[in-house]
Image (cartoon, rainbow, N blue to C red):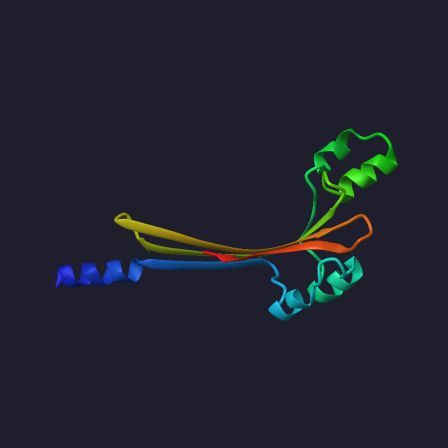
Length: 136
């Protein structure tokens, strides 16, 4: 009887932990299909896809050394090729843990990311739209 009681107490002491997190949003497929490179403007793009999660370019770090406010604005808003880069990002993370005190702990993490990147020229027209499907 003592062994059964011990097994019952161990089973009751076991624990499961589950945490799910989500950041950003993925534009719907119909909205992505409506974007026409060479024709869609920045305003139309934002109406279709909503606000981006990222607004960066490879030259952004150079803005820290710019003393001219106009030069700094250009560096912050364009990549090295004079394009504006907008990114929509959906990240999902699931953490699961099974804990048997003193004996065993098993932790798994699943991280999925979907990314949409738009490159706009100096006139604010979409030049390219890249879609990376959700990765496991």
